[in-house]
Image (tube, rainbow over all chains, first blue to last red):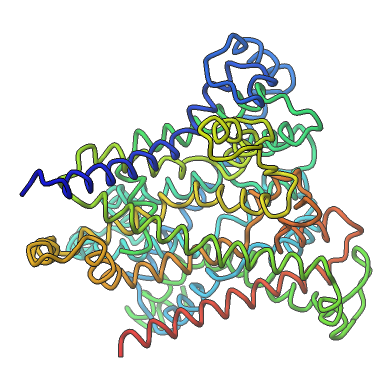
Length: 273
Length: 299
């Protein structure tokens, strides 16, 4: 029964299909890695073997791009966005869940409605606002509108439902103030929630494109995503250089994924708990 | 402080509640709620740059006669209608195959298929642009295995350019959706499948009669997420087509058109805001439909 022809056929079909999908998913990464070692002409011609141009490509990338500055820009934007979003959102998630009141519930529901606002409808007013504040071409302008995130607040509130109220009661008996309870008890207890939220915010900030494209206009302020995009849209793009850039831009998120795989998936699933 | 003294413990609680939520609510009000009403107001204005005057429904009338807008709207709806079902079905099939505990190398396959999610939208668009070059790796492979006789013009033919955008988005997001279904499948008792199998229910029927009905809420959720995402499509098309949405607007999306109207052409904030409200309305309609369907299900 177990090894009937039908079973074998279905096994071949299953492994064949899943295997093909896995291969197609991974292939662009392999192509990217091989591409970095080939010359631009070979890449466009679809050469699929390691070449000898890696050193040249890296050297060209470093000549064309001020690499330390670009990465510093990306890191700065990402770190500020991540720290501030996590701080502001976890405070709010805690506040909404622990100190419930009728007015705040109404505001919470109104806040969730903002999840449906498409960014395209915000970019013109935001651009004018940032211009009036004199922040065009600054990293503050990139970070500021992204800190208040209804989704991350929602995520923290959902997770706070699992925060044991006995801990809070005990801390109050010990005479801790509200902010101390938050800082010394809530934050350490909820670290896995912070880890998952960190991944969502980190990915969004590091990969953010449209808003930085609008506000960052000089080469001194540009982030890595903007640089790759402009390298690739040159009239004759040097694909070897582009590949080196894409690898460097993908490495941080890839590292986060491999070192925090469980929280990564948890973060992605966040909203359906 | 005065508030805290007057109302006793309840009041004190309230002060803390407001203090904790104020920073987030303030930022959301300033950078989301205020601008969304501002762009509504703007959509009734017309003029170049900051010199705007009231235009009534002028912008809405202009939408009807704007062939480029109609093109962007049709393209966006095409992506949504074609891509979302393909991706959701693919993700469902993969999730139910990978949910089988007897499948060898399950963790490896899952990780591999999820891997595209770590790339930035810009990075993978750039990769796809290179892979789908006229004499690039995809065309040469397809020719080598005999699927096509001559190279496909992925970036110069209106149909294939759209197909390329759809292939790219499907590559990036299928694994993401699959993870949602895998998580939901873990809550389904496997013995249902065992019983069905022993009763001789074929695999395909198990999929359509057990998996899909039980996953309906998650499918609905991911569909809405994907819909909202597709309606806002920008990064991919911008980077696959050097910001043009070409060939001859064949891949142009609403978001890209708004960007061009605002930052590339002679800026017309009012009209661009009107186009952006088309997206707002589409999202609202689709969210309402989702809500309506969820209600129907609970009955």
